[in-house]
Amino acid sequence: GENVEQHPSTLSVQEGDSAVIKCTYSDSASNYFPWYKQELGKRPQLIIDIRSNVGEKKDQRIAVTLNKTAKHFSLHITETQPEDSAVYFCAASDSGGYQKVTFGTGTKLQVIP
Amino acid sequence: NAGVTQTPKFQVLKTGQSMTLQCAQDMNHEYMSWYRQDPGMGLRLIHYSVGAGITDQGEVPNGYNVSRSTTEDFPLRLLSAAPSQTSVYFCASSPPGRQYNEQFFGPGTRLTVL
Image (cartoon, rainbow over all chains, first blue to last red; front, side):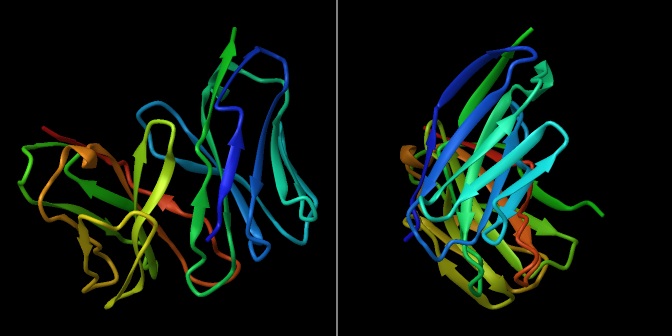
C-alpha cells in the first residue's frame, strides 16, 4: 500500500518568513495530493491540492509543487501570519474506485509574532 | 446543509465496554470513511464505504465494526473497548468520481478508554 512520509514534524518561523513542508510517497499510481490544515481542537480542512498532471499550483500565499519522478511534493507558505499556526497534513491518493487517501504524520507549524 | 456530523463529542469508556460512534452527512456523498488520529501518527484509516451496503477495511480495522445501511449514516462500533483505542475519531465523506477527491471531515469524537 501507499506510504507517505512528512518532514519536519515541527516547524517554527518568524511572522513574515516562509515555511516549507515536504512529503514523499511510495506508490507511483498515486495521482492526487491534497494538503489539509487542522487548527487546535478543530477538524482537518482542505487548503490546496494538486493532481499529477500539474507541477505547481498556487493560491494566494500558499503553493504546492509536485515532482512525480522523485515522488515528492511540498507545501510552501509565504509571508506567514500567526493564523497560519496549525498542524498541516499532506496526503496521497489514486483515482481508483474509492480513492483511498493515505495521510502523512503531520507538521506542527508555529508562527512567532 | 449541516455537512458531516458526529456524536458524541466526548466519551469515556471502561475497558471491555462497547459503544457506537455516530456519523451522518447530508451532502448525498457516496464515500464515507472513519479515521483515528493519534499524536505523531497522523490520520489512519479504520474502515470505509463506497456506498450503502458496501464497506471495507482500512489500515487499522481490528476492534472496530461498521455498517452502511443508508447513504447518510456510517456508524462505527467498538466491540470491546481497550485503552489502545483511546484516540480522536474523525468521520469523513467525499463525492465519488475522479474529479472529486476532497474529504469533508466531521468535528471528531474524543474517546478515552480507562
